[in-house]
Length: 138
Image (cartoon, rainbow, N blue to C red; front, side, top):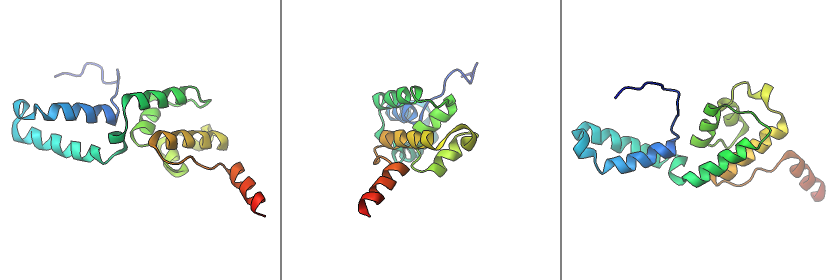
């Protein structure tokens, strides 16, 4: 097999996971023992990643939400958010180039909320909501 243009499209982990599940059935026909071992190991790794809980509809909705945000992300940054949804600002900053220059604090919170909702975690409480809660307690 020859790759003519490597940048035409990339697969997210969920797509790879689904392809591996399908190809594992035919693994003995394709490449013997080494191929089966590789498929098994990669499949076990991906089963423990967030992609195992994702589906095409959920990914599509998340990407549409990202598209409508006032944040310009590259395809690779969006892929990173799909493959490994960050749950902290630090993780988010590691995956987005020039993070502190490109994103304001409200945009960061908006993006973090979206990734947490996508990954099924609880919604992040914004600083303003936190301050309002503290004022109510006092």
